[in-house]
Image (cartoon, rainbow, N blue to C red):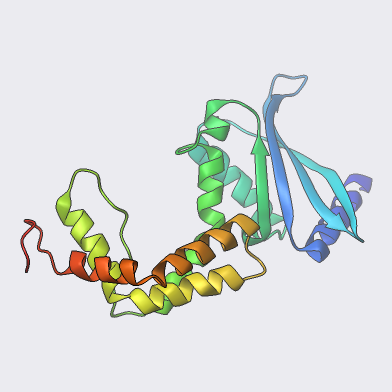
Length: 204
């Protein structure tokens, strides 16, 4: 079919370009069947390109289902999610919600390689840094202890991310900024002090 040939041609261009962004919108067709429209933007032969790929029927609108649909679509067409450098959606809350929406879920999937960089640097013997908690002192102690014990490895991982040409510029700059903060004596000193304090707030 002509449509399939055109789709395959576009997919080949995207794969040659390597990096791309996606634009996904949910809209009913003339028969009132819900569907997602996929548009991809990329640079090919030094020229920006924007191509519509396909309509995909959907049966639900929750973010988990939509994320699964988008990821499956990309996988089935040979597009690596790690090469996705941007995403845009309609204004519905289930599509663009910051924490539970589709955008957040796709972003989480496309950043897995940064997590792998960190865990590889730390190795099997050291704990991964934890997210700080506003309510549990023990969680804060765990976070600081993990930072102190894996200080050099964490900084190595940050430097690797900062130098990775595949990363988005904002991500590279953030990694570089964090690494520079770890170069400061104050940061190293405070992490050591924090790691020496027990959960009840007294020196261990």
